[in-house]
Amino acid sequence: MTDPMSRAAQPAPVSPTPSTAGAPKAPPQRPPLANPNAAPVLAKLTPPFSVRVAELFWILSFFVGGFGIVYYFIIRKEQLPLISDIVRGVEDARNEQTYTTAADIIFWSVFGVLVGVLLIQVTLLVSFMARRPQMRWWQLLTWVVQVVTLGLSLELALTGERAVPLRLILAAQCGMVLLALLASVMPKALAWSARKHDVVRHQQGSVSAE
Image 1 (cartoon, rainbow, N blue to C red):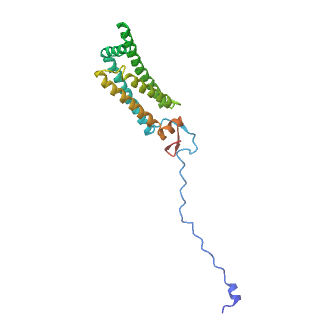
Image 2 (cartoon, rainbow, N blue to C red; image 1 turned 90 degrees about the vertical axis):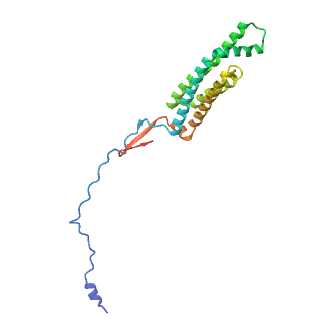
Image 3 (cartoon, helix red, strand yellow; image 1 turned 180 degrees about the horizontal axis):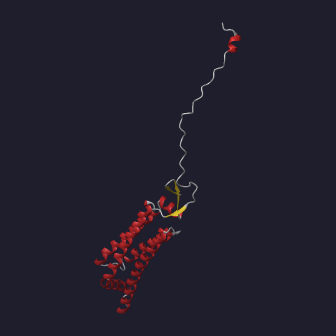
């Protein structure tokens, strides 16, 4: 049995301390290449896929609609007598000049609506791509005008064999406009329009969108 006095006389164990004399010092951290607190800046980023699809369908509808307008102008000599016959069928007690004048008014009215709506849609597309507010509602209104014009013209201004292709052309134009409108109301397209501007931050050589 160990004497308590001898146990007390023994030195306390000393914990080993690591030697740092020969250890290399850690290199200092590299300074960041960009300030993480840099102010955001405006940038022009690529629109979402749905916005680009909407723009594509709008552009295709412009080409189709423009071709239909040119074709309608070309066949006007064949269409005017047909329109006169339709007007004469409503009331045949007038003189021939009245029917000719009425046919001219109907033809050029439809022609003017087609041209006017197309030009307005081009302007609205430019405003839509610039993220102007409420553009979708105006674009929808132009589509409604196109559909109503086509419906009223089927039995009045778009009669005869040569007008059959024009009916298909104008119907295709309305379909493309509808597809463009549907693509423009996708969630990412709505968020893109609501954002108004693209804001980016430069962080350590990378660019992140806000």
